Length: 474
Image (cartoon, rainbow, N blue to C red; front, side, top):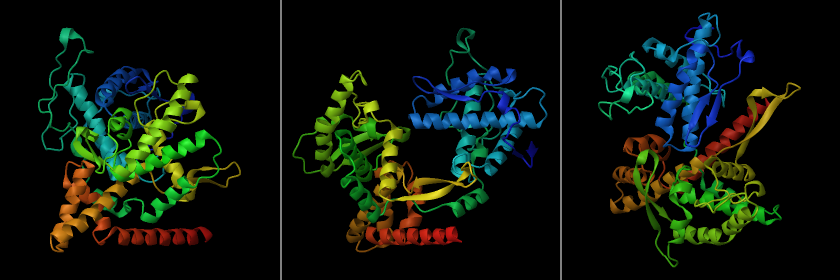
């Protein structure tokens, strides 16, 4: 029911109708099983948008965008039900207007995350609104949508252009924006208010980078893993250690690991180098930057390619798990997927499992699930993810450059801080210095060295564990 602009997502009809499906095609994700005769025709328009808007993105981003659009569709279902629709799920995507967008915004600001049970953070719900605006702008540009969602972020008000189709074929469309840099109509509602920003800052936590002691703990766990008695296990450990160190020392995103460092590039590097190997790459958003592969990683990676990876690929070909050798650097060593290129989710899982094995984890009661006897369902979650290694790379580079610029600027700490942050911005590939500063400055500005920063963060996390332990015992 619709109460105070918040919609109860528990529909009484869901047990009689099939759930939506997120389906993977060869190039992107689509939404299947559109319910209700009024919305059945618009599923095609949704999937055309998803294809054109996400097919060039990474697989994980494609799925994230599809889930956001699905959440919007489920919201419209609940609105229809709350208005007493005689037929469940009876709504039309093309009847959506500015008032509906305002309602969706208020719903998201108060909605809970399905994964954590906590309120959606500002970045999440603003991105979800922006994506909906982008979808409707796309439909407006091709002549399928003729309403207006309101102002764009830059202040202009969009007027839907008349649809122009080749041979009256709606499937043969092109994007018709008059200004490719202009924001979509209605995107003004994706801009958080000052109060939203204040609330978000109150909930924000420190950048979850690894401290020096935590890095050593993961290394020790992986290097001394003694419960593996077969080749599959030892080869997997070699790979996992390389994944960990590669992101830690280069700052690569998980989506860049397999595409930017293929085996062919690594094999082309001559032995005997004493300087880091520079790679000019195009990362997220097509932004160009240079990464530097340290010499200390080059030989271990080549050794992995020549021995562990080669054996896995040969065995995979023999067992017909793969039809040809993949070009990606890291492959699967598990017998079920032997020789197959590791996906992004696999790379991320290896780091999470290494953190749990090293004791960098927390056991908590699940926010929703219970055991059959009613007792709390306990889950073990790692304290870090693979993206935290990128944060760690940024923090380590900041302190390295801070020391360097402090010497050259005769201990002018303020000037050295800005210069160091600019270097981090360049290495991470951020288009704006503000992005880098907002992410890292609040957590490093009171520290003069990496060792001091690591000790302080270790102490804060230790104090937090003690407080949580007292609360649990209470």
